[in-house]
Each structure stands twice: as C-alpha cells, then as structure tokens.
Length: 172
Image (cartoon, rainbow, N blue to C red; front, side):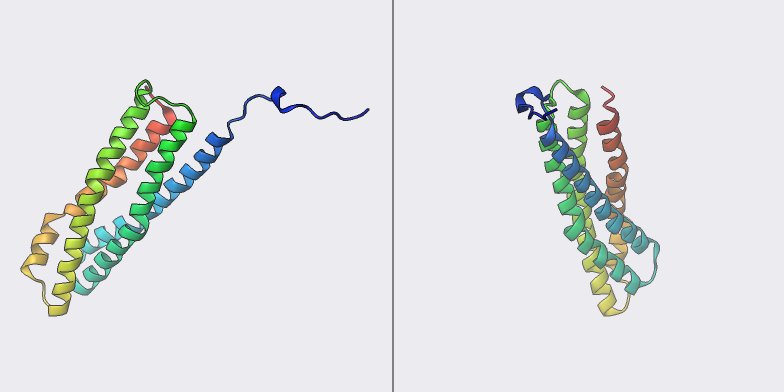
C-alpha cells in the first residue's frame, strides 16, 4: 500500500488566523490582568495607610505600574480583540454582545483609565511633596479625601469580569 498525498483543496477550511488571534488576545488579557493586579492594590493600600512614606511608596509604584503594565495591556487587549473579531467574521452591528462589549471597553478604557491615571499622578506628586516636607499637606489631604483613583480603579476591576462574561457567553 502506497501513501498518497491529499491535495489541500480536500481539507476543510481551517481557521488558523482566528486561533492565533485568540491566543494573542488571551495573552493580552493576562497582561491587562497583571497591570490591574499590580496597580489597584497599591492604590488601596496607599489610601488605607496614614504613613506618609508608605503612601508615597505605594502611589509611586502604582503610577509606575499603571504606565508600564496597565496601559500597554489595555491597549493590547483592545487591538487584539478587534482583530480577533474581524478574523472570526463577527459583525459589530448584528452581534449585540460584541457591540455591548465594545461600548463598555471604549467607555471604561477611554474614560475611566485616563481619569484614574490623572488622579493617581496627582496623588503621587502630592505625596512626594508631603514626604519631602515631612508633614501631611493640605493638598495631599484633599486628594486623599477625593478618592478619584480608587473609584475609577474599582470600575476598571469590575468591568473586566463583565467584558469577559460578554465575550464567553455571547448572551445576545
């Protein structure tokens, strides 16, 4: 018995581009999760602490993690998700779950993420000034009472399971 080569035209169409985009998108989501996991707990710790040096450390590290890990992870997740949807031939208008997912992503990552970042950088700067002076300044007290990074950070953390639920279960 002699083995014969089967022409490629007899194989069903494969979906390799979709599989590659899925793998890259999952890796981008892990990157986003790492960014949230390395930023948000430090923000909460800074707000819970009364020690100026510890607040300064936490806010500085959170601001660094936000720009180095969270922002690139959020961008990569959006870009890879878009290309995965295009490769899988999803329709942004007819697939209601994809439209809802995209709308939530745009609102959360183009409104909440920048607002959290601005609030975090303001708090970091105020904590550095207060730590240099050795006393809690009025500006730091006002910023700590404002809680902008905590509020928008919480929205970001809560949005990730909602976005994942929409992508996995495709409810409508």
